[in-house]
Image (tube, rainbow, N blue to C red):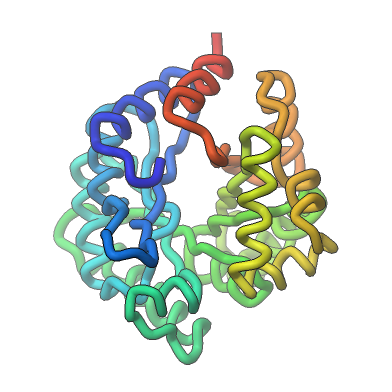
Length: 281
């Protein structure tokens, strides 16, 4: 869905809702290291998808915090929350050092301190300071143990990425235990599950392993050290509906509350075909 015009976003949102999906997460702007600017704003795309649907929950997955002040992020979220009748969810996170460097934005000296303060301000704004659109949920993009704990205790849950079913179960349990310590309800867990042709999934897995040190550590903690292992154990390369449904059910059984299909190298036509094949009849 990255860099798609509004009419395409609206079309996919309507198809997803018709197929029985509950949520649509839209990517942050793409920052390519070229002379041309790419990417669409995830809040504008979310507003478009929300306007095209009546039940689907929609939001960024995830919006980058260092490029937006918390107050500005909260106002955008509140607008989407109010206009959609409460169907907006704010996924946000710190992104990567390399990605921020490419656009001239400094990476916070202490990611934990940055996110702790940012989430506290978002919660304060959402719960009592805003005059409209209050109560939007916040999910934190998290990989390591400390960020996962922060997501469980200072946010409403986490947006997760590249997890085996075994580690999805561990992550769900750790977050639930952390939330219980402070009397929170069970935190939400939205997990991106790559789905696509084998070559495309493998290429994306390799890109994460080679380009992002934080993801390399994240995958190493799961014993995944090659792109082949990552693709085989965390993604779905069989696009037949029974195989995709089985993968979703497996992650639900592991405690993931919102298993998300993340198209890997798929065209809009392929995404459309997949949604139609998975439609609840």
